[in-house]
Length: 316
Length: 272
Image (spheres, chains in turn red, green):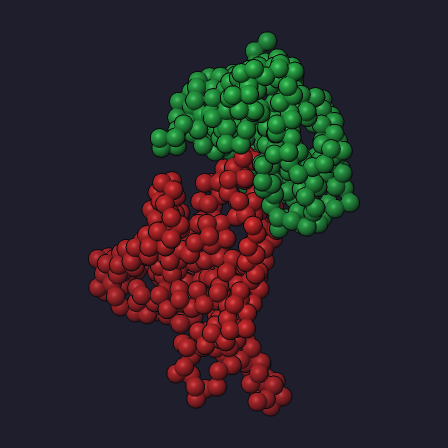
């Protein structure tokens, strides 16, 4: 229980937790605008990782439809990350067009969109499998270029290793979180978005094109999803087309833990779950996947509305 | 003079129920036009169609000569139609000031990039929008509560804030849905004066749904009366007040036949 041990787990927990936060924010944004969970978010996460991989490495795997094909170019990792994120944003827009808008326009019960988004998720994941194959993809170790793989710090008599990729994870996530918070809180578009989230009808009567804002929300959500998929993929590899599913469920635990629809809640929830996983004693590491849900269970017993969620007030 | 707002042959059916049947009227520029009628007469349905929230089954609406058929609520709002609601609909979590700033988004065509990167043009617009928002909030007497969340305001203040927010859209036509609901006599008097002031200050045309007949009679130059979705009378307040069909709608059939023209229809609804 040395200081070095503590710092090492803090580094591990914050870097992965910040990615959870970014991923979970994608759910939260759509939820706060439409009041519904987008189950295709995990598939967009997966798609983002695959797209960035192909753009950065320039080639496809060995057994998909695109097996053996190569791109005429390779992008530097930072650019591939950005391009993969933007394409994921477009995938988010497609999800809105396919799974949400048609039902909304017909005035369908919001719950139905849950099912149609689940359908789009299955289509996306199977499309990925069809095109890229079911094999494991790993980003090459030199994907970050000439940066050293880790920085070792001496703390007391112990060592703390900060992997470069952890710094990238934390740095990119932090930038995104700050940028998003600023956008929502202080820009005119952010205000309009909050207005749409609070009451779409009223917002439309004030001249706000609600559909455009919903589309924008799906774009940002997809972008956050694809980006976090890439970051996780770089860190732990892409274990096949279904690798987003487990993370998708974990991110659901994150937003419920933080409080559904609360943006600070998603961030806090992500960090709490990341840290809880990191501080799990090594001999219990086989329970790692259960940590988020155990934590969720305990928190919901005490605070059913989540850590930062508001009590739903029923007004007559 | 061509009317600011004209409604022709407007009908709305919900399934087999006719909420509005063949309604025609015109509102002239600068007018305060009263729309009265018993509960369920179709007044709010009419407002919903004027603002594009629900689509007419048949009939047309023209705002400043422009046909509103098929236009989205947002597009209609940008053309200059603003409204308030019978049950107030503010953005409760936002501050008073931010509520009033929301509509400027729609009017300011500065690009997203301008907003994000703070070009000088977009900064200037932002400044102008902020000044107008301040002015509107001061005007409705909420200057001291500028940064409080809208949900924390008392009832009367929320009503006034909703009007300020509608004004931030720089509308040509302002639709007020029962703005005096829940107000006492003195507050109603204040509200009447306030409506006149904003009409003159912003060059508005006002369409007012109100149950309180004395208030409508004092404020409006023209009045239309709806009953069971049909326009049963329209014209100057004193003529409408004397109209047998109106008296019948408010007081019931048997009595109305022989009712004295002097019966104040306000008496029947004042307590409603």
